[in-house]
Image 1 (cartoon, rainbow, N blue to C red):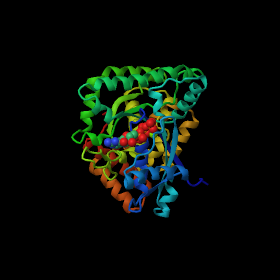
Image 2: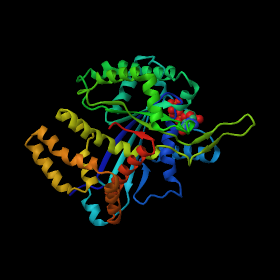
Image 3: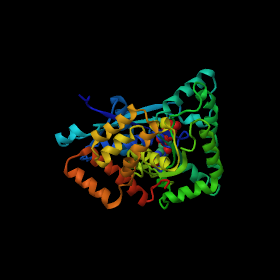
Image 4: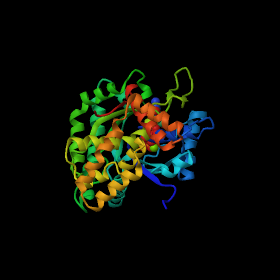
Length: 397
Ligand SMILES: Nc1nc2c(ncn2[C@@H]2O[C@H](COP(=O)(O)OP(=O)(O)OP(=O)(O)O)[C@@H](O)[C@H]2O)c(=O)[nH]1
Ligand SMILES: [Mg+2]
């Protein structure tokens, strides 16, 4: 008998300098889903640790009701664990679906890493340990602080170069420790998305505006960061660094005016937060298909990449999961690693290719049939499409 609930876990790592908006981001991601007025007919978002959930919701309520922001947490690294708990659909569906619960582990790395070197050996080993928690993430968000871009208007390269340079220094500093045991890593985030935080400060910008600015002002620095990360991983061709961009805003912040008006925070005006779950759960799958179509990736890298992509693809397309699973098991047993990866490819590709009206139709059908898992995943894919057409998200083609 299968154990319930069957869980799929995705990890996302969020990096940004102190003050770039990380804590506010995770609070605004979670907070609205706890409001009485929140409606979602497919799933509920829960915090696995009650205390963590309360803290995030408290941060959110502070912003919503008192226009106060959370205290800085620049020295802390925290992993927030969320569960996307599917509502009960038809009993038929519940029995057949390949998993019941999607978990998101959100790793929030300390802002101080960007600017302070570790001062003691102990601090250094603590940082190495923290880095190790990152390894299971497929996707990392690197925050570019919108406020800083404004502060450096006209000479944004000064900020961007220092941001990317500092981050690269961190990577280089940790490299030897990470490689010490087994050499280059198989499992490491391979999709590094540049995210503009506080994008409410740029009401006229599309994600392409942000992307053009980064490339114009800091393409070389991105390239250097890419090489540094490339030295840590096996198969460095399978890396997307600075190929994907997203605009984020946790709320619309009205600053105090000289006329004495207080700060106002409109938490109903958020940008990009609804894209986080779709990005964490589907982008790795899409990228894996792109890479596999472009070059040979060793089996163990494929397996670690978008871990569980087959299950997600099966759920997304509604392919008979049992059949697919059996095929994969047989191939695994016969140890035809390359065959396995190739055999999975066509139906992973089919899952990725579902788009436009066809995707909407799949979504509607799944909703009618109360197939909540499939409805959720097809909805995530629709959200990604929408994010792209709204110029909030740019992904590598
Ligand atoms: N305009 C605007 N300002 C924001 C937004 N998010 C955060 N801020 C501002 O940035 C400040 C810092 O945000 P935090 O989330 O605490 O920053 P952090 O990255 O967690 O910083 P550390 O904890 O020091 O690492 C907040 O107090 C807000 O004033 C946003 O979406 N838009
Ligand atoms: Mg913080």
